[in-house]
Structure formats: structure tokens, C-alpha cells
Image 1 (cartoon, rainbow, N blue to C red):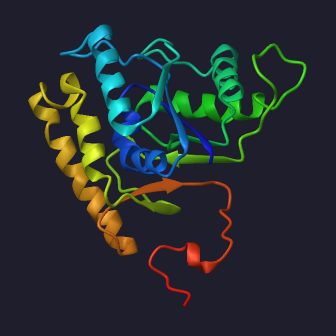
Image 2 (image 1 turned 90 degrees about the vertical axis):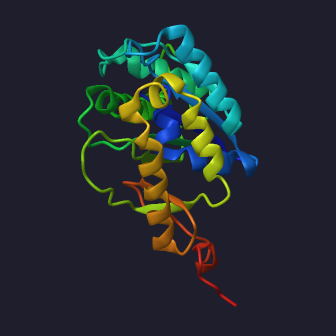
Length: 231
């Protein structure tokens, strides 16, 4: 089974962008680590201790491990230090696959996270560098959508999350300071569920989540395509 690293700028980004996929991957037996670049605070209803408890509960619901890098929220920068810290996690976790936010966004922390992760993937393979763990180059780097831009995703592929919709919803609702207490944010769960149903309809399933890749995916056969019978 694969070791999968899902990087988020703040606790809740991974759940919003690909919570159903995380639950599905865990159910399939993969080892999933959620890496939060920052603690996500301050927010109007939150504080670091409460946000940490919410993040831990969301990870428990999805069945994933969680780790906080604790870089500065709202001031996240693409730097050598940040790259090497993420590369150290990649090496010690022995990541086979990495998910990071889509590379076009209105949020500076999201943009910085993606640039950091892209470079950290390269740094993790270097020898004669002061990083923990042995060199490794994760085979795949995929992008999930948690963008602050008002546009519709144009993904490379979709992952069927049918049967894991409730886990995604529960993991998001675990962030009470973000999606329950702020009245204006309560609709987020509903429109995400509508988006999941829409993307599911594109591949003939009840729900799906969108992803993007810059590198081509390989199939062993057409039988790997959802909804295509090869019999």
C-alpha cells in the first residue's frame, strides 16, 4: 500500500478539497498523513488550541495521521527553510504520493504552500544535504482544489468518493469555529456537496472529487476507468 502525504496551508483545507478521497484511500489500506503548514489562526471564532482539537478530530474521522509544521499563518513564504522542512517530512514519512493545493489561487498562503511542496519534492531526493531521513523522490504529485478564486475547476481526473460523503461532511463540521459558528460559512458544506455530486455525475457515480496533474497518468488497462466495462 502507498504512503500518501496531503499538504494543506491551514487545518481544514485538506478536508474541504479532498476529504472524501482521504477517507477512501484510508479505507483501501493506504497510510495517509495530513501535513498542516500553519495552525490557521487567528480567525474570528478560533484560537490555536481549539483549532488543534478540531484538526485532530477531523483526522480521526477520516482515519488519517496528522502533523503540524507550524509555520506563520498569513505570512507563509516560499523559502529554503520551508522547503527543507517539508522535504524532511517527505523523507521521514517516505511519501510515495503527494497532494498539494492547485497552483492558481487568490490566497497567498495557498500559493506559497504549493511552491514549497513542489520544490521540497525535488529537495527530498538530494544527497549530501542536511535533512533527516534517506533521499526519496515521490513518484506522483497531484493538485487538489481548495481555491479562493470564483471559478470552476477543470480537472485532469476525478476520484469516485461514493460512500465516503458523510465522512467528508463530518470532518468539515468538526471545525466548528470555521463552519458552524460563523453563520456566513455554513453554506460551504452544502455547495461542496453539490460540487461533489456534479463531478460524480461526470463519471457516472454519486459523488467525486476533482484533481489536476502536470504529469501523465498510466493505466494498466482500460478496466481501471470508472464505469467502463471491458467484458
